[in-house]
Length: 413
Image (tube, rainbow, N blue to C red):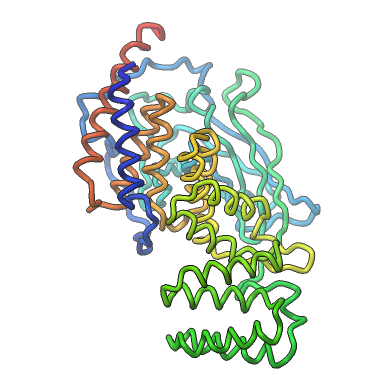
């Protein structure tokens, strides 16, 4: 393997991190679904590097995945339940479950609801037509799993790494969905309801002042709230937020720390501290803080707490966790967190996770996946700051991928 090229790729990601290239940026909502193209799109910018794969035997292809969705409490399955096939962290196919929970997913047909690496329903296209035969080779499903997507429920996953038997139709069993309670609005904890009336009144005035942009007044009111009730973790958190806006970083850090110490199950201050640690490149602290968040499923209502981190923030926690693991050379953990960030980042607001995953997969010599991740990043950020540099590294990855494919081809014949 070309070690100098791999070293160049690693240097590239280090420079990207150092230059703030992977600092999250908010993107606008992606456009709605567009009509399918008349011909399948070609992802690679260099068609000459494409390698023609040998035709798979029909016995090695899976044409149908059959199964059912059921609820953990044995209640009826919601009528808007969607079953998704996720491959390498990207949504590839979606089908609706029947009212009784059963589903049938046809693979490899022109009528499949296939998605590209971005998971954008507007990018639907027919399956690559290089083989007229229906179905998908079993080995291509090894990095895929099935899960259910339905509002108000979390879902188990069925891995497709080892499909039993040799039939073209495979019964994968049941996907179990667990009902969850998610309350929208301000994140609160139980101790907040114990605050005296005067403290709550000052806190509410602080919220109003902050919303109006009156930061000095907001700081005064939040300060009064914590003076009256020192255990008011919400007020400490909001005070930290205001101090951060006023560029008083040390005071903000102290306020966030006070909020976190008062209640370890109150998650927003942990995320704020993780962001500050990220900016200071304190990777061990980032890992500890985001690990605390991700160990306490913030989308659930547990033991008197309402945890309602915005999905953007939930994605942010996974992203920072992935970067910290990468910087600490814990690449397997970085990959897991990066893929999770990619899954929950809908609509896409953190395109940098694709760039990070591209480097992680390149390190594993999974060049095809690395290429797809970097191409996805360029699609999401068409005018990237270092677009030319990224495309240069893409070209190197494509050469490596072509070389690997060519060396493996004689073994498959």
